[in-house]
Length: 227
Image 1 (cartoon, one colour):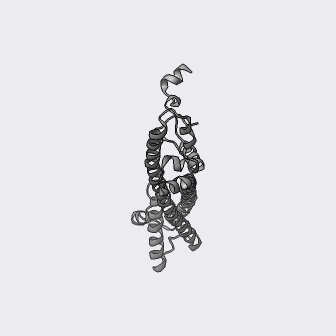
Image 2 (cartoon, helix red, strand yellow; image 1 turned 180 degrees about the horizontal axis):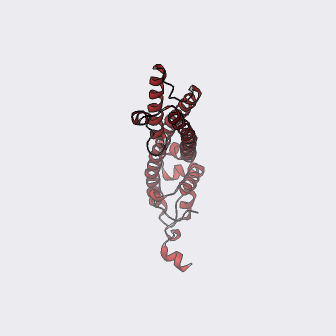
Image 3 (cartoon, one colour; image 1 turned 90 degrees about the vertical axis):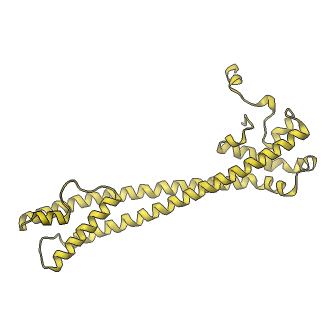
């Protein structure tokens, strides 16, 4: 139920209710009010366009959240595998003879990485060290299948990160388009309301047919307390 005429303060549902009334009833009053054809056309399409903008913004927002959720899940899987591979590598180094320099080159000191950026960097460092040692015939490496799995985790995280960024951009664009439409419709509603008051006054019940509230029907804090 509409309780005010502060169009810029409309929530999504209020705006849809208001525009639906405008779209459904504008033909009955366009001649009486002398509304130009371009504004009649706006009125007829306004509710449908607003509904579409809401849907698109909602879908893009959900896909954006979903993209980051998938990335987080991939990060967790990669981190768990990294920890297990690290334990294996440390066991191999302990058996074959490690060194401070090699431990540092593998970046095995401290806690294992978490999160996309740290995992990507850690896997890249490990892969570079692994390839160097293999080329030199040094056995202080994990099996190739382990490295292949680490690289697979890296590729999956990288793919999901770029996808999440793209979806975030699309969600931002959908919000921008929705906001622009909201602002345009606000200006049109202000114009139409001024026109209606000019012809009917502020108390005529016909105002409600075009998505407006009569002066006595505006809900205030005082009225709420009286209720």
